[in-house]
Length: 231
View 1 (cartoon, helix red, strand yellow):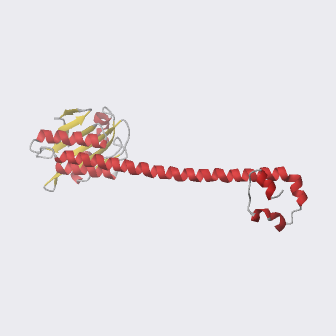
View 2: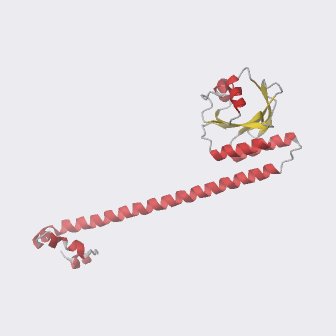
View 3: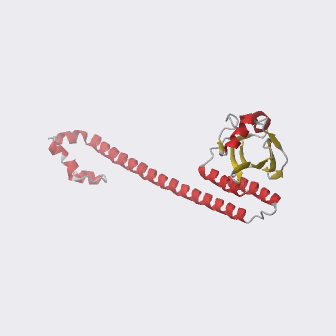
């Protein structure tokens, strides 16, 4: 069992490994009796090193692929939002109906949801009326929500903070809508952003996720706020 024998099996080992026998005074007869077992162990060890090396290489490649995918996704998202804001900047704000229709359509397309609506307070702030709802590629308006029927929701609206809600059916602000509105329309999550005018909340833009819950991301909230600030 020597270097030439290893080479005959296609294996080359450094002298430091071959010197182990000398270091521990292993007699040559030991190798003669167990040469096949030792060769098998060496081949297995080298194969094991190769396998671990492959796993490490694959892991590094996978991480790089994930980073590239995240970068492409982020780039695509930024482009989508930029295109949406560019489209929004070209809206004729003198035409209120067109402006509201475009606000809901652009928001639905950009956030990839099917329901977006704009609600405005009446002068007494006792109710909000739907100025436009874009749902399932159609526009409608005129629905009314009264403060006396949904006091918790109106209290949250008056706070002036965005409602970023994953489970709208259990959240204190929106659970009042569960039986009459959320369940019939298969709504699970809501993102409601206040509309301000002269420092006062005058309405709200509602974004509704149907058929499944949604964790709203910060960039989605920022986009929704950008649209609401221009309504």
